[in-house]
Amino acid sequence: VVEQISIDEAFLDLSDIPESGENLAISIQEHIRDQLNLPCSIGVATNKLVAKIATDVGKASKRSVIPPCAINIILPGQEADFLAPLPTTALWGIGPKTAGRLEEIGIHTIGDINRWPRDDLIKRFGKFGADLATRAQGIDDSPIITSHETKSISLEVTFARDVTDINALNETLHKLSEGVGRRLRKENLTGSTIRLKLRWFDFTTITRQKTLVSPTDNDKEIFASSKELLAKVWHSNKPVRLIGVGITPIGKNTRQLSLWEATNKKDHNLLEAVDALHERYGKHTIIRGSELKGIKQPQSGVKNDNKKI
DNA sequence: TCTGGGGTCCTAGGACCC
DNA sequence: TCTGGGGTCCTAGGACCC
Image 1 (cartoon, rainbow, N blue to C red):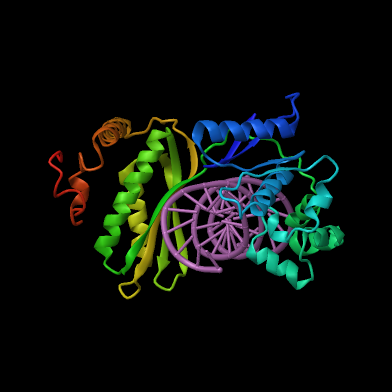
Image 2 (cartoon, chains in turn yellow, brown, purple):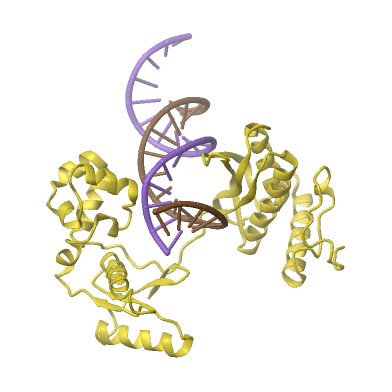
């Protein structure tokens, strides 16, 4: 039973395998080295929380050796003792802000959390405080989750130089909207809330969102909404550093009948055909002319691309 | 330590409905 | 017509993770 948690990390539930955790860890590490020629670190414990931290601690302790290939095993019953001396930030969910708040009341290590009255943690941090108290003891009964649904899709870019030109911003928005639409269709998903993200030149960041009447996977609709949101917040004297488009919440593509069904279907088929061309021959194979009205044609790639239709 | 490009989850306020 | 309670949805932002 495997839960992938990022591009290069996973939880494995080995409880039904008779072999010892240590032997399994050694053989997994060997296989990865032999077959992929890659280093990896492994933590073995009775739950995900402790296994993850065991990996981090093991990896850090072998940092001088390159590359780190640690195996760190925490025996049942040793969880709290293992965690006690570690800084609070070793715990999932404690970042710089929360660590700062804990420091203020004299909590520096996970052991300190453990000694602190649970009720007071709850008073200060709410539900999160209760969680903290439990996890500081090394208790975690969260299950291994083998599949997860996509909950949102977003794309964003940071400009090399801050942008004030609304046409340039719209052009970027258009490309991002296409990218988001493409991913939706690829995963056979639709979303109903379009979110615009803007980072101004001074690094302040805002988001603006709009919920559609019905879910979509259509570039045009995503672009229209994000463009509308941008128009509401854009100031000619406020340079933009980053712009992004996202969609949420996500549902399975249950194409519902609507008054515009015929148009919708045609549009959808067209987009899927374009997706297929892009996938097969590259991004500039085909460009939608009608949507580029009033928007400068993208410069990159077009010049040397004789496949453009 | 910071930046960048993804994500997730939580909170809080407001609108709206019954 | 007004008040109050409860629930849901939407919006915006923040903290955190890899």
